[in-house]
Image 1 (cartoon, rainbow, N blue to C red):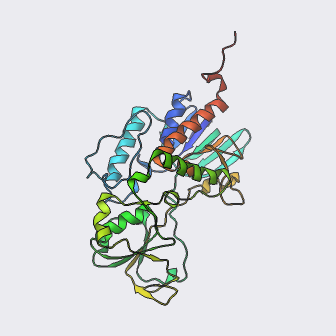
Image 2 (image 1 turned 135 degrees about the vertical axis):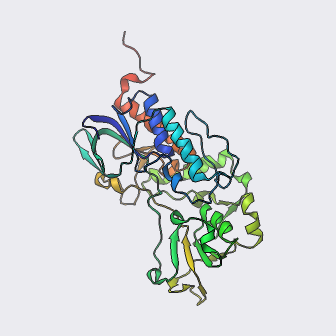
Image 3 (image 1 turned 180 degrees about the vertical axis):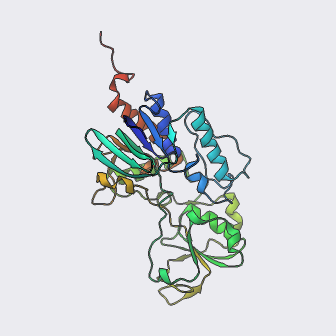
Length: 361
């Protein structure tokens, strides 16, 4: 904890937080004296260190380079929850980024001239804030009638540790995202699986994902946050892509999708037509929500449920930036957002160091 007033506090040391910290330092903010990064995790790696053991670099959809240092080459079988954290740790060390951990932020309060960030290590005073807390700590499980009566096991993808624990069981996978597709392929090799989604999946080929399509996707997500609406998942905009390692599951009929059930029973689920199915486990691959509860005292949310954004800055207060939120939720988007937030805060807090500022004669 520091008793001095900082220029910027960054909350979170994942991809977006490290990108923001890198650019803030490069743009003239002094590490520890003017900017710090508060990370709740005891080790570097952001959410990656919590991913399931069976997730390898071969399975990862892609990791964007952090600014200044490319992702190391990978052979494929390396565990993602070790490979990526190692990359992040080397990055922090190489650029001597001012990361303080483990520090859990409980709330952010507006005070005269800035903000008070209340944490497990005391309070920090700052003129501006970059929030990069992502979503991992807010797994979302929707409520369905009877959910509390199920006698089998219920877990979210955040709690998944590998397919072996489901050997010989019947597992219901709920959700229409990329994680559901990947875990269905993996679990179906050792267990019986059933897949349910709210909407029929929309499958796309690799050829569909070109730069122009990517820009359209970002524009759709950005349109929502500009309107103050909660950001939607990327898959709700992009559709699903079947990768080579999931082709065998496709051929086995694993991706035969059923509509959502209407209720959960003690030993399974039931549909509206009276059909029922016995289950041993329900895996909720139903995504995450933005981890922003600590910002509640700032009253940033609109009545529409989201936070109205202008780029990475909140419309209600340009001193507050959200990176890794909405259109910047991907790793590539997080890098760009980190630079945008740093540049805007440099212009706001240190206008004298702007490179385009004319020198007085």
